[in-house]
Image (cartoon, rainbow, N blue to C red; front, side, top):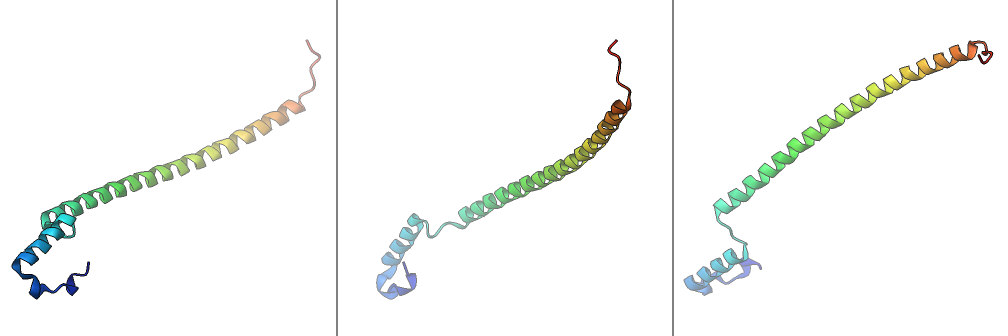
Length: 97
């Protein structure tokens, strides 16, 4: 609805009051306190999401550090296993006693 196209001078006080009541009832005009409450709620939810994102980023960084550390441990263990295999392969075969 284009409010600028209405003939405001011809509506009169009762018509203008009816128009305002209709706009309030349809939700096109809301009280300032309601608007502030909605904005505060939105800002609070955004702040919660920002904290959640920060926590997830921290967990992701910790996970990457843990994976890097585990990769290092696996590399060391593989080297130990290769060394142990070479040592065992170099031993003479037993006579089955």
